[in-house]
Amino acid sequence: MSTQEIKRVGILTGGGDCPGINAVLRAVTKTAMFDHGWECFGIEDGFLGLIEDRIRPLSFQDVSNILTRGGTILGTSNKANPSRFAVGHDADGHPIFKDVREKAMAHYRKHKLDALVVIGGDGTMTCAATMIPMGLRCVGVPKTIDNDLMHTHVTFGFQTAVEIATEALDRLHTTAASHNRVMVVELMGRNAGWLTLFAGLASGSDVILIPEIPYDINKVCDYCRDRMEHHKAFTIVAVSEGARPVGGEQFVHKTIADSPDPIRLGGIAHQLQDQIEKCSGIETRAVVLGHVQRGGTPCAADRVLATRFGHAATELLARAEFSRLVVVQSGQITSVPIAEVADRQRQVEPDNELVKIARSVGTCFGD
Ligand code: F6P
Image 1 (spheres, rainbow, N blue to C red):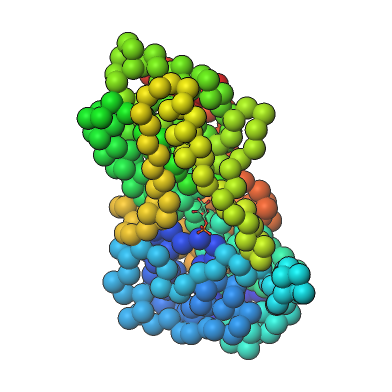
Image 2: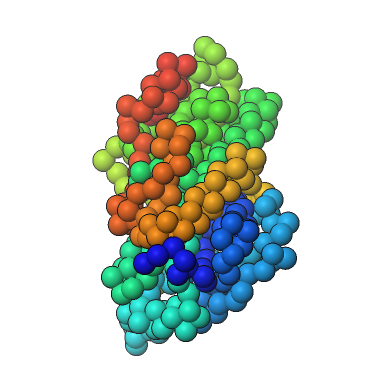
């Protein structure tokens, strides 16, 4: 297909929101409008809007003054997988799934969309990948505070979440020091420890527990006691929601049956609080940072990254390079096939440079 055939571009944002989505929407729409003379259309609530035909034009006014705004002006959904869409429940209350990709493709054609820009994490890219064989033309933009997409060194939203979590950990230092307490702080990140590793290192947290390095609770308690006796009377423990003890399981908060990624992690901070208090004898408190890590305005680095990503996605469309995800590798924007990131997650290697450095400055990983 020649580049001239692109005239109408749909944009959707899938999965959990994060700071910087609106900056991507703005960059795609303005680049499409100013550099190429294309029209853009916003699809509401991710793939749900494509399935339910909720698609509206995006004007200059719609994307003006949204660079700094958190969340997504289009809405998002982490329950709408077109190839496995929940259409109701059976007598036992279990969801009934149906393949509604044809319906979604019918709406794509009805609005005469020439291609989609799909902004999301691995779940959203998996949804897009299953529709490519049906004729969907798309490019992807990597979004998640978890920073766990394959083939990109950073996703937008991550750096803002690191800033938010770091500020919280900094603040918790002063209250922990005043009361001689252990503070156990639970961070998001699913099965990847990037957010906890970066925020833990940036805040000088004393213990960093991540999914990729199972911990021994006795070693964590010994470390807290030793610190109390010889160094400082307080300890900050930054723990990923996906961390787990050696030989044990992750802490599952709940299961959302009709979500493509049904497991919601959570609860480890309170478990650790009880265990550390009991075995170390030091008064301990748990703090769960939760969705505050995803809220609010993107930091400057994420605004720049999101704008670079949005521009690059539009340029991929202009060059008719479909089915690709824009990524950053060694600081440069490039792209990889969407199929290569679908259904996969990038985790911290236990011998990652930052892990080694953290160990060198005395950080305990519980191993
Ligand atoms: O993937 C982003 C993320 O915030 C994870 O860090 C977290 O585990 C999950 O989403 C929470 O999902 P929800 O918004 O459905 O509670």
